[in-house]
Amino acid sequence: MRKKPRIRQKIRIMRRALRMERREHKSSFYVYFILRILVILMMVLQFFNKNYENVFLCILTLLLLTVPSFIQVNFKVELPTGLEITILFFVFAAEILGEISAYYIKFPMWDTILHTINGFLMAAIGFYLVDFLNRNTKTRFNLSPAFLSLVAFCFSMTIGVIWEMFEWAMDHFLGFDMQKDTVVDHINSVALDPTKTNTVVRIEHIKEVVVNGKELGVGGYLDIGLHDTMKDLTVNLIGAVVFSVIGFIYVKNRDKSILAKSFIPVNKTKDKDYLQQSIEIEEKEEEERLEKQLEKKEDK
Image (cartoon, rainbow, N blue to C red; front, side, top):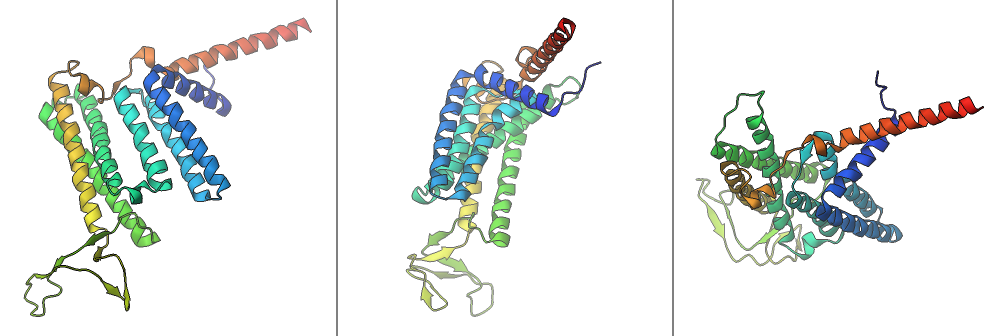
């Protein structure tokens, strides 16, 4: 009867499986290794600068960089190299460059680019989940390529909406500013209609806004979050559409489209089940340790 692995054994098994997984894809492993070194260097720098919140972000980033390998090992999913590298760069760009290096502020398009990539990645996940069920012999789905792409698109947009709701909640309840403000030079509002007849009043060429007797000094009207949210959802839609098209091509021409195969997750084959291989190695090493202990006892 097989004994249940102890906690230390489980940790050894998982670490070995993760190492085996990373080394399977050399390109993504090199990217992972380089990004990991950069994050560690940034963490050391932030520690000496006493920016402990950024130190926490670096630790979080190190954990997030292991997520692709963790998913592949535990859920027996094979992430293509193109998709895995995209995820790694996305994590690094969002946390280290975006938050710590303030790229969100320095480069206005940075947030837009990341939300577009996020739409692409979430569509990939949604597509895999439905395609897996569609190809599973135990289920009776027979979905068309167009419907698979539609589900992937809807999954991505749902995740995008949930994220925007999370940003709003953090801003509203905890006083954050995740929904970045936008400076606009005109507004349209029925609230300013003196006749109270639901007539739209347009104010143009706004140069300055006074709040509590003090000019904001931003050069226009400060929109709180709405423009940012709608822009994020729009570019999320673009990313989702792009992947949905790739997914459609993949289903119509399985194993023929090189581009699609670079981003579509697939189920692992038995020879790439590194978690099971790691378990077997651990069991073999445990047996060898027990044999050596018995030999030492016999010698005594």
